[in-house]
Image (cartoon, rainbow, N blue to C red):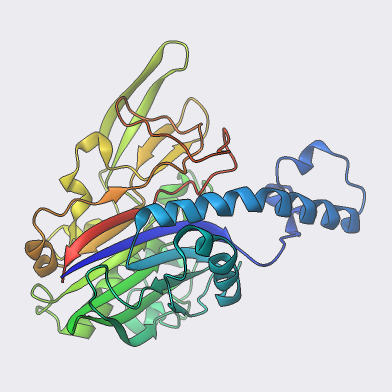
Length: 368
């Protein structure tokens, strides 16, 4: 029986306005920086208008990207709350695919902005197999002390009693046509600003390393240490880290070149170094595995994979020919595509915005 499983960082599916930019320019939208806003009340009115004006096109594109996934189970990151998810489904997704996702799961996690991981599930697979969720468990409350993960690298920004996951690790046990499948849905710590001579990725690496160790511990606790290889599970989500990237060189006038680079360290090594799970994206060509374009100007541009569906060894073995699909039609035009990978963008896509997301949805068809 075939199941389509997808993950997508939908980016700030929020039902609240963020007015913090009035007092913190780093959080202020670039449009409002062009104007002399003299009062907080005036700022709030402008921010509300700006957000509403941008949101409709953005969410139409998000819905188109989800429709293109055609997933039976869809794992989402950056969802504000269940009300926002339901409003998005009714107002946008329903118009693309109809009443497809009757089951929805979201547990409030640890993110200060209130963005959470969520899962949307059809009642049946495309071939008519019932999809039944039998258990949901949040791990947002687990601390470094609980798992013995606190170390010197974390001490600069954390204490032992702090929670490990900056959002959550949401575990869902399913039965697909009576067969078991467990999903672990995550959104790891983002790459923050540079600190103490380290770039943002390196400065936040200890946090993601701890999150990866914690996910692995949760899986081993679920199935038994040393007994995970023959179990049917997947880890899905935005890992905010990568083991390889494609450096983008050149310019628009003279053309671009794309140079693969291997990273010396990644939090994801904890998953892959001993074959604990398989990143099936490596079944795609080296230049065609990316899910996000990162740019801080011409001096720092690369393509990388931040969005993952890791399969357990048993699940990967059962699906040796399954290759993930990457939905890139919602990418803004500023994204630089390697030759031969260009796609037709969704209507009204902009240079930087509107867009479906900076992240590309990833979907894979698997037999459970």
